Every structure is written in C-alpha cells, then in structure tokens.
Image (cartoon, rainbow, N blue to C red):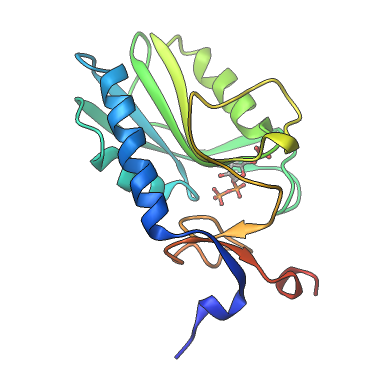
Length: 182
Ligand code: PRP
C-alpha cells in the first residue's frame, strides 16, 4: 500500500492540533461577523480543506464562493502577478468578504488579490490564513486571522502540495529534502 507518510521528515501540525485551532478561529470569526452576512471566499486549490473545516466551524450567515488563481513563475516561488483562472460568481460590492487561504509566504499573492478585490468596493475585506511564514514576507500585508505561525520549512499536506501531490495528507508535514532536491 502506498504510504505518503514515508515522504515526510516529520509532522509539523497534527490533524488534532489543526482541528482544535480551527474551532477557535471559527468561534472568533463568528463573533466578529455576528449579525452580518459574509461572503467566504476559498482560494483554490490549497485552501480547500481549511475552507471546508473553517466554514463548518462558523455559525454566521454566509455565502461560499470559489476563486482559482495561478501565479506566474516557478512552482516554489510566487512572482506576485496573479492570473484569475476562475473568478467569483457573486458580486461583492458593499458586502463583507473573508478570503480563506492556506498559507501566506512572500505575501505577494494576497497582496495582489486584495488589490483586485478592493477595486470592487466590498464593505470589508479580511483574510483568514491557516499558516503564516512572516519571515518570508516581501510586502506589507498580514492576515487578520492566523492559524499557526510556522518556520520557513517546505510543508505539505492539509491542502498544501508539492508538484500537485500530498494535498490529501491529513496533517501538515515537512517533506524530506530528498523529495525536492532531485
Ligand atoms: C500558495 C498559497 C498562496 C500562495 C502563497 O498557492 O495558496 O496562494 O502560494 O505564497 P505567497 O505568499 O508567496 O504569494 P499556490 O501557488 O501553491 O497554489 P495552490 O493553492 O493551488 O497550491
């Protein structure tokens, strides 16, 4: 049987830790948006599990929508210029929007994306991010809600990929260097 665990150096965040933190985040976000409708926006593909779990931990009225973006450049580094592969279906003008992302690294992707979305004049625009690597930041942006601040290591799992794989690993793990130093 294939065992993806063998490709991991170690578990950084267990599925239990992730679940506990998302429960806290959902509670906090629900309090902050109490009495408001919110458009919760999943940025595909990495945010898929986080979005699914976070929205179910939230109790406020919400619409869900999905956006698919692709950044120019190589797979391990963001260029900062984002191409929209699938735009959101709902109008966000005058609405409260919560962007749900898996990871903030250089910050360039979200910097660009928030600029695009701000131009549509939402009532508010916030970011919930599961993982944050602040030491990698190349622009002045920070998420409003953060799951975990993590060191600058190559992580996969719980939605995060390496060359498209490992998104189904149920925890966040550090990949063995030999996996990408080929
Ligand atoms: C990841 C992640 C963010 C971006 C963060 O997406 O989901 O969008 O990189 O990097 P940055 O802060 O340096 O801009 P990726 O391009 O890997 O696409 P995916 O979500 O489809 O895996």
